[in-house]
Length: 363
Image 1 (cartoon, rainbow, N blue to C red):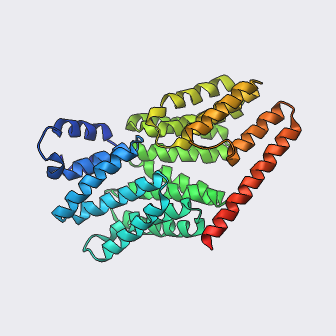
Image 2: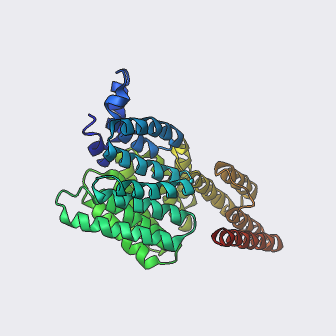
C-alpha cells in the first residue's frame, strides 16, 4: 500500500487512500512503516479544506522522511506543504519553501524533475503577492521543463503537472489582462486532462476554469457545457472542496441569463457544501450571488443581509472594495444615486490605498 499510494493520489482515488488509512491506523507506528501512504492521503485531504489537519500530518511525516534519509519523498512533501501554505494565504512562507527546495535539490542527487514543482510554487506565491511578471516567468519556466519531459515519455505520468501549470498560467494571465494566453492555456489543460482517463480531478479543474473563461467571453452555451463537464468530474473524484466553485459559476451564468430561480438553486447548493470549502472567498461568492438575486428581485433588505453574510463568511469587512461596489449596486437599484456614487468613490479610494501599499512594499 505504501508503494502504490502516489499512484492512487495521481489517479484521484482519494476515497481508497482514506479507506487504507482507516484500516491501518491500529497498527503500531504505522506512519513510520508507511509514511508515503499518509503523505498522499494528506495531499488528497488538503483538497477537502482541512489545511491545519494536513499540516499536522506533514509535520509528523517530514521528520520520518528525514530520519529515514528518504529525500525523494521529502522533496515531494516539501512541495505539497508549500502549495498548501500558499493556498492558506501564507504566500511569503510558500515562496521561501520553494527557494529552499531548489537549494536542497542542488545539494541532493535527486531527479531534477523536482525543480519544476518548486519553480511552480515560487511562481504561484509571487503571483499571489501581486508580482505577476516574476510569477509568470517562473510558471512558464516550469511549464517549458515539464513539456519537454512529457513529450519524451510514453506513459503520460507528467500530464498531471502539465495540466496544473497550464491552469496557473491561464489564471494569472487573465489577472495580467492577457485573455488570449488565458484561453489557449485553459484549452490545452482540458485537452491534456481528457487524455488522462483516471484523473477526474485534473479534468474538473481544467473544465471549470475553461468554463469561466468562456463565460467572460460571452460564450454562454459553451460555458454551460464545460461547467457540466466539470461538475461530473468533481463528483467522480470526490473533491467536494472544489464543487462550490463550479456551482457558483453555474449560478452566475444563470443569473446573467435572467433565470433567477435556477441561479438561486445553484448558489444554495454551493452553500450546502460549505463544510468542505477550502476557500473562504468561494463561500463569499455564493452569498454575493444570492445577494445579487435578491437585489434584482427588489428584496433590498435581504440583499444587504446577504452582503453582510458574505463578508462574515470571508472574514472580511463591508469596507472591502468588492463589498462597497455591491452596496453601490443595491443603492442604485433603490434609486439612491447619490448614495451609490458615494460608495463607488469609497471603492476607488480603497483601491488607491491598496495600490499605494503594494508600491510601498516593493520599494
